[in-house]
Length: 342
Image: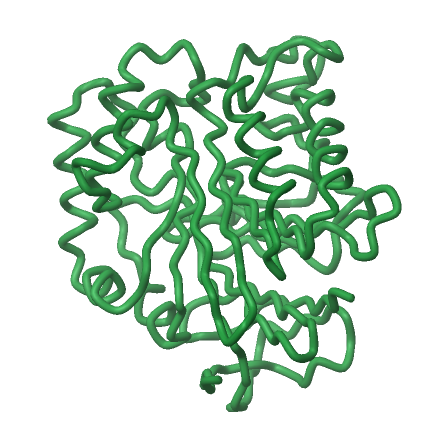
């Protein structure tokens, strides 16, 4: 058991609340802390690493767009990763915290890119270098960066399942009829994960005995009306993931996503599951959609945050509870959500 000292705006008496002006000191008790974020430019100041360090996370999860390279030049890509690795506060995080993560299009190398990106295999090796994956790791021979890691804590466990929504993702459909960038493919057309990764994910959930199963997806799973990249552009894949989750009967499935330069909570009930599935979007670390004026999301809980932020999940095993927090500069909690998992 450890105590995390952190700024919060109120006691968790409601399922979701917001206070963006004032915070108070309060000691928060958590058994395990996961911090994550996405959309990080190395040519912009990151004011949040000290705040991430102050949460004393057990693991930091990169949610994608960890750098903005947009290149098939591996020398340039490697140089940009090295700039991030040498950032002083991030170096402290690497020294004190386990680091996991996935990529999204800009660190993958091609804006909105997928299976067609010709440099993806070379780019994957540079990503694995950035993540300090050993040269003899089986991940070096796998197509795609998907993987998982299980954490054991005092007789309880958390399984973090990292998806790759780039390497196998097939063609998107441009929206030529409205002002949106994309529209959903015809039902059944295309894939996000590809056959091999789908089989792997099903096995991960079907065999998991963990108290919580955290699925990391670079793009949003639930929010699907904005016209940008999302699982919703492949509606059959949305349904397939819901079925895989429900059929597996896995405990505490939570989705983490990034990409959007906004942060928000989305939540829905799937089948007869005893708990709702939450999609926690945290984006971005160095630049946000400050001109955000609203967009529909029928699954949204609370308010959209459109300033720089990162996310944390605080797990309390005895209470079977997770506290989700969107955190800004100076440790201010911009939005929070509590969920009990029976």
